[in-house]
Amino acid sequence: MHQLASVTPVCPGAGASMFAHVLVQPGEIAFREVPRPTPGPDDVVVRVRAALTCGTDVKAFLRGHPKFPMPTPFGHEFSGEIAAIGKRVSGFREGDSIMAVPTAPCGSCYYCRRQQENLCDTVMATMVLGAYAEYIKLPAQLVKVNLYPKPDDVPFAVAALLEPLSCVLHGLESLVVHPDDRVVLLGAGAISLLHLLTLRAMGVRHIAVVGRRANRAQHAMRLGAEEVFTGGVHHAYEQVMAYTQGRGADVVIECTGQVDVWEAALGLARRGGHVVLFGGCPPGTTVRIDTQRFHYDQLRIVSPFHFTPRAVRRAYELLVGDRFDGRALISSSYPLSELAHALGEHQRGDGIKFAVVP
Ligand SMILES: [Zn+2]
Ligand SMILES: [Zn+2]
Image: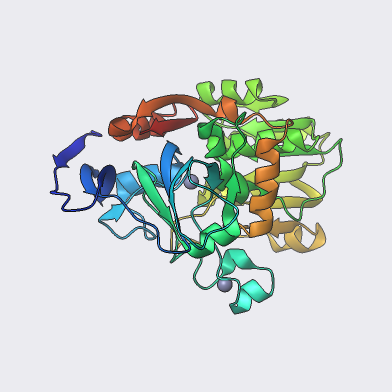
């Protein structure tokens, strides 16, 4: 099952050392003593105070991930305090509490010049991994673009929601919602529940969540869903039609990354409805679209990827404001050494997200 494979002590040499998890291969995490990072003139080194489990990490741990060639530092949702700072960095000081996302667009490529920074030529390749560690180094461009101060009243674990919440806000960017819209969320995992909290903060009152696991459904009700349909997506059609006076949903947001759920999503939207296909599907898969529905019912289908600095800014404002309470998404915390436990709990759906605390 999910066990720490080994603790491999490394002689740290002259510099200071730290403990960090390394994803050695699928199913094997090593908790190692490694050199502590030091900042270049424009970098910041953060002492991690909370890192969150994420479905992406669970997938990488269990099956591997095309974006994480192994062995790799591991973990990408974090917050903490500035432990060391480059001499040319301004606006921050050692000891400041911060929140950040693990990527930053270059600002100058073809996509960045068109405000499509989520598609930046280098944004994924320069992603910072290694949040499941005592310290993490943030490079110059990230410090410049996507580093924010953390207010004292926002807990570190909640501040670490900045990355997934930025993805959610990017996905909702083109959405225009009326207060009486009926929104259907497909899936009841952390991303679905983040959408739920965000839509509630935007003033949307009528939100139904389609899930399968009863415990997840309970979370959805607690977080403000109006209805929870636990029969699974393929049995949800009648329920969604009943919920929407037979029209179909004004907005359908797919949060599972499964091909059959993508296809089902298109069938649940009303004429002129908005479909957000949020979850990325496995490589090599295709979906079938009913062309009559797509054209004559004029569905608006978007499949957002990653986020722009605009979305990070809005996610930040939501997290530090008083309309959004992310604490309900953090089910419990584990010490850093018990990462594998936290990932296992996340995978079993025993909670929503788990904080790992060095
Ligand atoms: Zn994540
Ligand atoms: Zn770029």
